[in-house]
Amino acid sequence: MTAPLVESRLPLPLWRRGKVREVYEVGDDRLLLVASDRVSAFDVVMAEAVPDKGRVLTQISAFWFQRMAHLTPSHFLTASTDAILAELPALAPHRAEIAGRAMLVRRTAPVAFECVVRGYLTGSAWQEYRTDGTLAGEPLPPGLVEASRLDPPLFSPATKAESGHDENVNFDTMRAALGPALADALRDLSTALYAAGRLTAADCGLIIADTKFEFGLDRSGHPILIDEVLTPDSSRFWEAEGWAPGHTPPSFDKQPLRDWLAAERTAGRWNGDAPPPHLPPEVVTATQLRYREAYRRITGHDLPEEC
Image (cartoon, rainbow, N blue to C red; front, top):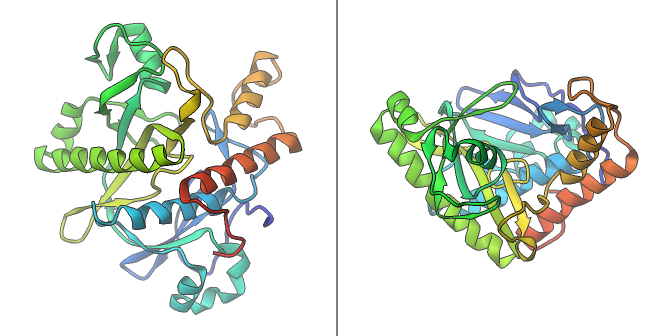
């Protein structure tokens, strides 16, 4: 297992730095996305990194971009370290820094909405429904319980937030902002991608409770799939055999981290704001193993040490 990467520093123009990724410019028409091992929970970035997390996110996304290529074009070009270095030989001294965690992509104009598809009633959707019987202000059928299966799945867009929580909005809000043609296309693409992903996950014994997709417009104005796809950071995976209506099973992601932080808040040792408490080594290791196992379950093989 490789040492964790807290932050990449490459000899390329830095376009933006997010909670997890650095995005570098490669000419006018491409970007290099580098997923660090930074980890956040409850909207706070932890001081400790989780080894392998960035490689898992990058390589799972690469798996889905290629698997979903028949459904929609995407910004994905390659996540092969050798292929990236062949394109960008100046990065050769930084091979260890980017190995397995860098993705070369086409540049697009990002659409300012997250395209969320919910197959089960959980998370913020369950919290709103439990209080008001609605999702983004729109009524849902009565009598649903926590983790109820939603059939058909609900398309539930959200506004993007640079910090803090994204905000669920109804589809009419998205249509008014983007225009009916683009909004309808994004809804249809998102539900088709979710349906395909759900079938693959079912073969692995996993449920995709919900997920978010992001899209950008290419130079012709056509929407293409961007960012990350069906990863443990963008999706809620559950063990199929552990699901039953009435309670939310543990997520197949950074659940060990969230559980430990929740206990710290309950005990009054953390108020939920930055700076976060330092993570015990066993929590970091448990989270690392959970990410690696997610990769193995989804792709069918162990995370390679060199990608």
